[in-house]
Length: 284
Image (cartoon, rainbow, N blue to C red; front, side, top):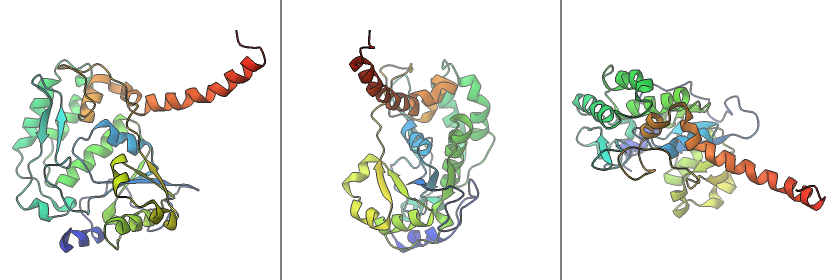
């Protein structure tokens, strides 16, 4: 990461999606505070929102360097010819900027994305339910910065469409020190974290001892329990935008994300009771 991008962690980018918390405060949470910090993605997959649902505070980690050909500015939807990329064009030189400073190139892409979504999900059961929201995003607004677009979509979908109660803040709300993992730990400390929920891929480079020394418990997200649901255009695939889940399932979308896992967690709790009943001769 170049110095220009690093310094952006001490300054503001797009308007904050909610009230920032004070450095080091618990933001109104008593006791344990679970935090996740992830770069903003464009209409991300359901697993991204699963992380949001499972934490008290979610940090848009957009003061780090933009990575091209990544999930920051593109995602997949189901199409008749197979998974289709929807890509938000960004200005030249974006790879040398922090995510929050990346400008979107032009405005024609928005109408094209909406046309693709409306066409390939024309028969989706809940397209009409979300049409007004999507038309407002793609036809009713003009987006200048990628981070602003991503954060708006993620925040609105999480809160208004999936019912998450998570607090959203930005990494640029804090004056951070250090590099890489040290910077992340500084962010988590200032965000009041007592535990950190990470994606599973981070096992390859996270140093658990550093988190233990900082007094922050470490956990990894498990994406393995998601059920399939009716999906257009051939065989089911998990790795597509949350829009697929919403347009197919509507208000029941959470059941295909954290609902299945929560049910699985409840079932084992009944096992000891069944064992006691059997031992007491109560089982049929």
